[in-house]
Image (cartoon, rainbow, N blue to C red; front, side, top):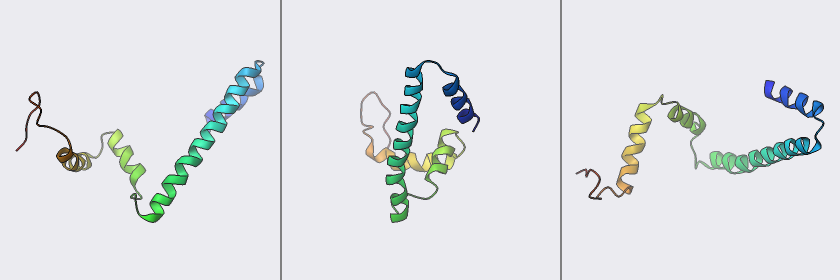
Length: 92
């Protein structure tokens, strides 16, 4: 919320109309991007294509909290990666 208050104060105090236009178009673009994301994400949850804890899982991966998830994901990804290159290690 503090960022919203700061943005509103800057817009009202700004004399340059092009700056105000940029902020307005940025707000519109952010809103449309959120609508587009949620129009795919929410039906995906409801139809069972995505787990309900997907945002939580991404957060734990970004902050390096969930080591077990990383090991599980790497075990699933490695069969699809070409690791038979002469410059890379080969696994049995």
